[in-house]
Length: 452
Ligand code: ADP
Image 1 (spheres, rainbow, N blue to C red):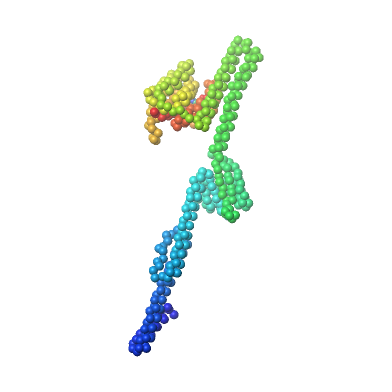
Image 2: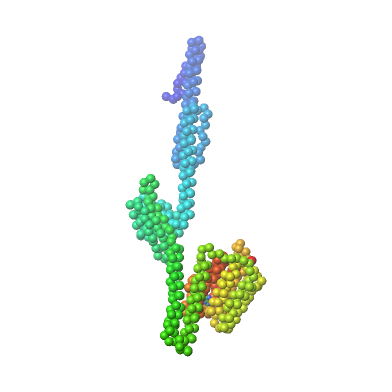
């Protein structure tokens, strides 16, 4: 029976009584109509009361599907009981709170993911089933595996048996582990790997593995070790010679009018070489020391070039080399004059050393407008018509103790540190140094300076 049948029947009774026309029936008619009107009102209200529930259920279903969807308008309270309004508004507040909480969680998750993506260390996260559920950008770079990494197995990403075993072990024992691994090259790379369980509140949720690249540190260690080995070797050679010749002199050669002075000269030469080597090592260590500062000042380019030229003029003259300067000497540059003078002298010294008799050494400068915002620069070039450098060696000549021909360098009194010092000095000025060369035809060493 519908909720309308009672009022409709009463209305019918009222109309019949009205038509019957007696006082009693009029009374019955009045009562019937009054009850009918009230029931109609009740039935109508019942309609309004029932109406929001299917709508609300749909709203809640929509929110369950998408907790961040915009909420529909707050339920209107027009013609609705206070209790109903309160209930609907409580549900609406719950929806709002739920939406705010979910959006806060979404922001927090996005922030965490940004942080993990920005890390320089590789991060790999596995779920309790041992599958990768997250890998950051650094890990993608380090592993060389194409994204997405999610859904793969750790061994496919880390591609290292020991790491795979450590993750597996961590899943089983819930214990952390640290290991060092080497990825065979090229290029060879070293990593320190930390594996740890994820278990907030004691519940095992998987593992997190962090890959810290230690290649640079290892390389520096290797450079230091090589440096010590090189220095020892370089010191030992002249020391052994000095000792050998001194002993020979002591054993009687001192009285030999021919061998005596010759051996003494050899000892002097080796002592000078030792002195140069120690000076270069000290210069290098000063340049590399923390807090080393260049003393910048504006100076006349011509003064720098003339002072450097003067140091090599006797050696060039002895070899019959032609020394030329092509420069606007009045140009002013900003630099540490003492250091740039040393760099220029080293380059000119090499040009004279490695250019056979009759050759030419030219010191040239020209202005250059930098493409960036660093302003005007002056390029200083030291060119020679000497033996040249094979292209395979060219990029290494600025390394400490690197020589194309060890025997020739030593015979010329070289230490193997001259160009390393030049590079340090130029880079300490925030400038650039480079070399070009043609084997058998000559070399050009260039560096930039800031125009004052
Ligand atoms: P060295 O004391 O041996 O000259 P440097 O560091 O000054 O050491 O130079 C490194 C190497 O670069 C040299 O041993 C030499 O082989 C090469 N080199 C440097 N300058 C020249 C040049 N002007 N012409 C040819 N080779 C050069």
